[in-house]
Length: 388
Ligand SMILES: Cc1ncc(COP(=O)(O)O)c(C=O)c1O
Image (cartoon, rainbow, N blue to C red; front, side, top):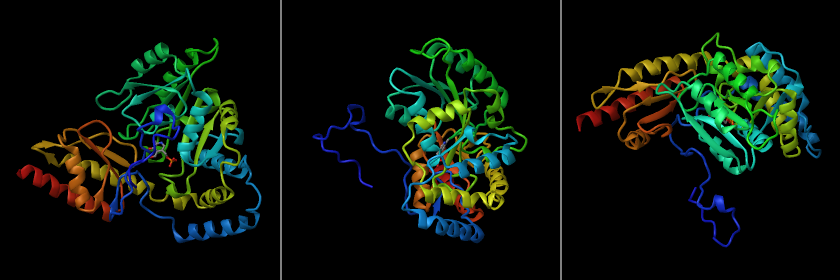
């Protein structure tokens, strides 16, 4: 796509002038490892169910869909009970077009002029855009050198800034760092005591944990979903895009107290989830095990790739790899020209992502063949740099 050409005669909001639409490059290359997708397509059984379920609802497409998407919320509840051991009522669940839309709805309901959202960087680069779009202030605390959260400084910032939303990602993107449940509990306790700037006393920040990649966590690590029944100011955002291998279906969901869900219901677009989306999502939940069947393998690939990367050198120094419980790895640490490495890989048909702190690159786990091609290409690029 070409750059924006918006005539200055159009009354675009002042704060949007000069802005570009956000998004990773969508390039037609043989190996795409840049947007943290699941590389494995739905299997033929799932595809048959998708087609069947869409055919079933097709005669109803003259009608608006169930705007409360009750069946789908029940499916989220059943899935979370199985996946995280937490049984939530459908009044504690909510779906949207990707967790991107969930997050925007949270900003619409809890952000706004005079309000601030607090996060810990490096983190997912869309969050500041939601803040901008909803006129919400945006503040960050820096993570530790190993990308773990500096919980003490984050709590200090909660007390100083008095945000209305604290937004944390676990496992974090682009670093893969998980947030231990004890830290989530400490942050929740801080939020439950803190004030919100501009709000009456007794109003406290919500803590949003974005668990887009949580199914890739190491086994035995509890999800923040298990804390929802005890904390009315906790919201956990989830998605079917990653482990569930359903990025194209655009389905994300929110698990939270009924109060948070009801707040989001105020700002949602009427009928925001199409009948087709609901049917397609429900079809996948008929095949949960198949959809998730590659997760364990992708975790192994991640660990093997991390070990391999650590054996490679750039200008004589071994590559660093951030500890990841996700389906991607942030690696390098001392690339003094990361754009060049990115471009050399792209020239060899491998698309990864220039993201995160300077000196680092992010690669998402692909199929075994794609990872072999990635390793071969990166080894060659590193050899060329070494020889110069
Ligand atoms: C941390 C994080 N949250 C949310 C999303 C958005 O996912 P979805 O496809 O559900 O909108 C992404 C996508 O890359 C992500 O990295």
